[in-house]
Length: 417
Image (cartoon, rainbow, N blue to C red; front, top):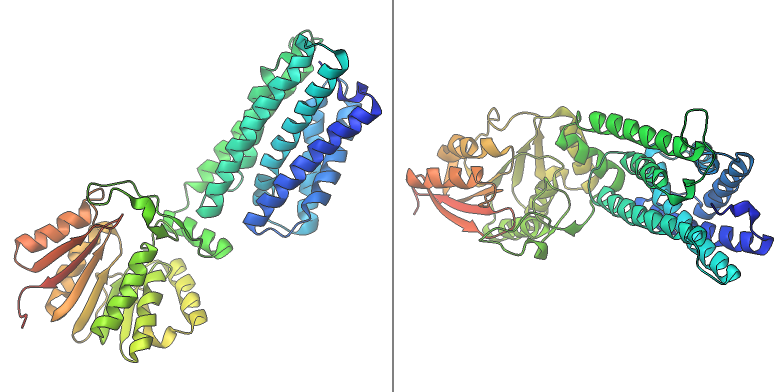
């Protein structure tokens, strides 16, 4: 095994410098996309110096001691900067893997060039380079998903320990290393420890995450990150083979193009009373309200049964300056009572309720008004079949728009002029 601390001083400085620079650049990019205000270069320098110090004094478990020393420093720095614990460590994990990978690559070139030949010992850093580089890429992609949508906090950090433990355990660096009192080398014992620690952390993190409802996960993510514009990732359907051409904010809001369509529809038909089922975070409500404001008339009545989601939507409406055009109710769509004629009905609540909602409000619908049902693609089926049921009973005339998640535009048949 090539000992970093046995290198000549100038080689040692090059290795450490490259590793710190690579880690700092990666961390700066990750913290930037997460919106965490921390000096990435200071973090990497301090954590790196501490990790090297721990590794230097731990002659038999250099890798494990270095990681523990760096981790302890990161925890203290996170408290100093008062940033969220797990998101901060999640951002530091790809940076640590990147820094370690590049440092190992530099060691390989310096040692191989210095010896003038490539031997087994000089090839060992290449193993660390490829494994850590692969881990860094994998963790970075996980971080991308965490930025775009809700993901378990800490899964990247736990994944780093788990994957690095596996990679270190099978490293050829331990070949010929002195055995501990338990049999395997101290290095391999450290690898097993970090693998088990990562697996335990990941199990606990995922167990807690899956206890939270999907709505509340998105709610928390939007509260932290705001609306993040991204490419639609619904799967392709026969009617919409290229969903990636559309954009979205989150998995439970309509596509951005559908939101724009709602506003255009409102400004086109000038409804006086709009009813929306399933407010959630109010993306569609706000687009409808923008159209009503341009018209200078009308109101959108919208409902949200979940008290926590309702409160978040209420705050967004107040901050938007559009609250005078919105009547928000904390109740179920099947319990909500609306007085008078409905000019536009937009159904976007739980999928099994859409057909029931249309049946409930159909007697109040303006015969010349419009009914919209979201999530009516052939992949989702429930809403699509509900619309077809209503059409088969001669209650509605239905058109299916070929959007990624599907959109029904309908008009009731009875009473049209």
